[in-house]
Image 1 (cartoon, one colour):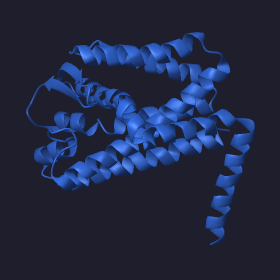
Image 2 (cartoon, rainbow, N blue to C red):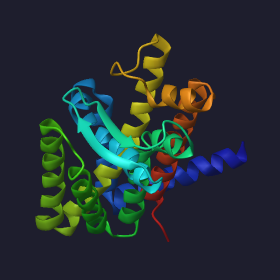
Image 3 (cartoon, rainbow, N blue to C red):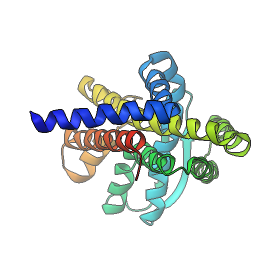
Image 4 (cartoon, rainbow, N blue to C red):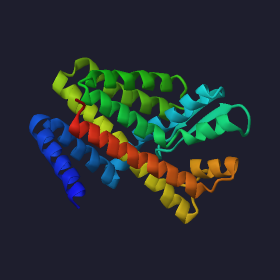
Length: 242
């Protein structure tokens, strides 16, 4: 138990030090957790996670050599990314695999940039990614969603002072990390009921169809990736990087 006690003491001391030296980081964590945990706010904010999710599909589709035909974002916070290419194969598997981990990966990148005092860079990175996403959006609601999200992030990056940029970037990183975890939870709940979250084939079921590996295994992989991202991102944000 001594090893575990040492780890817990280190985490507690780090959290206390963060609360003393960088209170905005812990405040951002509490705010992000409330937004993700409260159903009413999550129904609205989930759209941001969907943008990152569909952006992950789109980016990997392009990297895998598939022809990207567009992204659609809907008012129920669902989305779909379509591409041209083989109806199977490794490239399509990677494309379906990329969606759920994408918000978590972006959250970890944001955490690293915040921890190394490059909060403004993390905000501009998000703006660039949103512009790239906007070019592929094919419906009016999706265009408005991406423009509003990009406008808020861009305004903070352009007009905000260093303190505001740091707090906002930290909140965004926490939100993406927590949001990625909740979206995987919703995926698993939908699969247990036998009905996908938004009525279409889920990514896990699409991967099962393409590979023969059960959808539950893919969902478990998404869970693992999200949990690792939350732990890693939280550790970086709280402990910082020496």
